[in-house]
Image 1: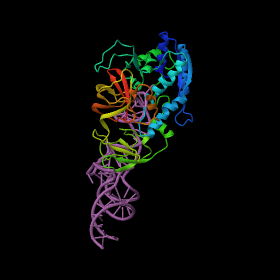
Image 2: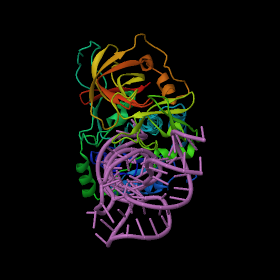
Image 3: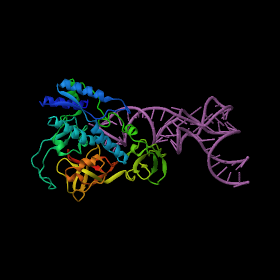
Length: 386
RNA sequence: UGCCUGGUGGUGUAAUGGCAGCACAGGCGACUUUGACUCGCCUAGUCGUGGUUCGAAUCCACGCCGGGCAG
């Protein structure tokens, strides 16, 4: 229970369904030095505790700060230091909520972990022969939330079958308005609370502010990709990502044109920019490579058309999935990446990489971000852009 | 030193005697459990001093600054 409405209602529904349920707040980050922003986490704990009281369930705060720092914050900072654009929330789900916390819950006698995600876990289906001949369908499926405007399945793209087996998403078949109504009718303390945003658990802190506090400045030139002309300087490549327009600070001097980031050059820490055109080098990609492939069900081992969600809240789009030949292909990035390390254990298929061919070129696919694979509204898995 | 030419928000530019506008940049906000994108709102300017005029970015004089030609 995060102290928001969604997890509040999730707890309420479980209780109403007769489950033996307890509430827990995962304390993962507290802005120790008050470096950035205030401390809304205290308020969140109070809210979560009040809701638990209202519902009539036990409540406790579970301290996972060390794990969060090691598995998410380290991944985040290391990723940016390497010029990537990490996705901390996806990693938080895999490593913390359904990782460390799931283990904690199991240790304490709980059968499953429920969250306030807008996603659905489907019961095992009858055996289904899939068109690529992979075999019978087994295990649980992860479906998009019923509320397509709030669907959060994307953030669960790197979960494993084992993790999904222990996961429950009580609000996955509700729409946000329905959920608000339930919270209001039940008189929950969080019924009218504004949705949270920002980095999971770190609070409503802008990423730039967070990075400013934890990553030293590393200035470099801003270079126009088309002719190599140096247009200015920047304070650090970690403040930018592919396709970004804001904060470059270079006027275009051309009507209705603006510069966007089209790349980062490690050699001299140059920020490569170009006008925001479909043909700008590197801005749009018709093909992209992904690594650290993760599958919720059967891995896809043969070329096959799939749907993909390129980023959160984007529509699913058609693509051709072309796995690289050779089992157990080592993953390119360094083993210091927690994402890699975690993927390193178990199924060798997780090591695999693939080539993705989009039907339509996609904009701003930054290395380190996640591509989620779908078959209709069923989430199949995900991979990390190389 | 003489002549020519130009000077408008942070940047590039419109307005040729009649409400200084646009674009980009910047700020704030909306959207959003990641990074982005997007959308809305806003800040900010006539090189200076005088003069002509009901009225000056616009015309005149001088000055300052930047280009060019002449030397």
